Length: 112
Image 1 (tube, rainbow, N blue to C red):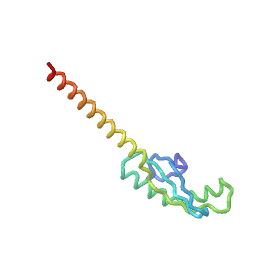
Image 2: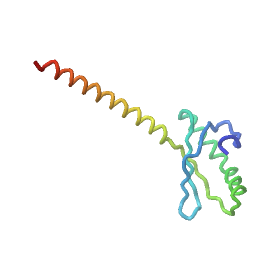
Image 3: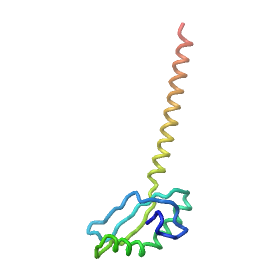
Image 4: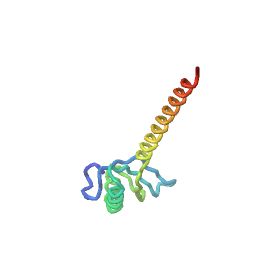
C-alpha cells in the first residue's frame, strides 16, 4: 500500500521494516523507514496516521478476518543509525592505522 495505493502527497517513499503485534492481537505498531530528511519522516508519519482507518479496512478485506488490530506507526531510524555507526567505525580504524604507521616510523628513526 505504501508504494502506490495511498495517494496522500505527505507520504514520502518508504517501506515497512517491522510489525510488532501486541499480545492478544488488539493493537500493532508498524515501523516504517522513510527515504528522506526528518521533515519528510514527520509528514509521512502524519499521512499514515490519517490513512490508518483506510489501511485497516483494506487489511480486513485482503486478509479476510473479522478483527484487524488498531494500528500505530513509528519511524524506524535503525538503518540511518547503522550507516552512521559504520562511518564512525571506519574513521576510528583509519585513525588507528595512521597512529600505528606513525609509531612504526618513529621507532625506525630512533633505532641506530
